[in-house]
Length: 196
Image (cartoon, rainbow, N blue to C red):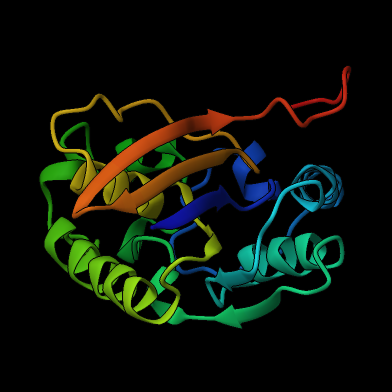
């Protein structure tokens, strides 16, 4: 058996402005750092042995802050965990996209990474983890759209449309050639009154 905990990175200024981030290397804001510290405290009370992270700043900072609470778990950076490349839409809001490309901007070729490419790199990562980390509890710090693509692939037919919250935890297990979803988009670790 292997247990994988997917963590979406903490929030950034662009998250709050609702700008597409993609591969743009945006750092955590102060709230994002607090969120990462908060989930780190939660995860410190559990058994995690390995941390993988996207090499983009916002995920790497989140993983590093989590790692400060889980001292025995080394952070490994992997570019395959990067967010879906947003092409020309990176840095823009929905309103700006409509103004620039019209209401049908999603149908235009704006250089956005297609689903097949995201799934190919993501599942290659998953297969490596299954081979190298068998029997372990593995944290994967990545990005909202990327994690949703992975969950849709592992659990076809499940409703994964809602956005994942920043620093949410989603737990999956793999045993006897089957995936099981234990927990989805959990944020119970946030302190009461913390702005989300």
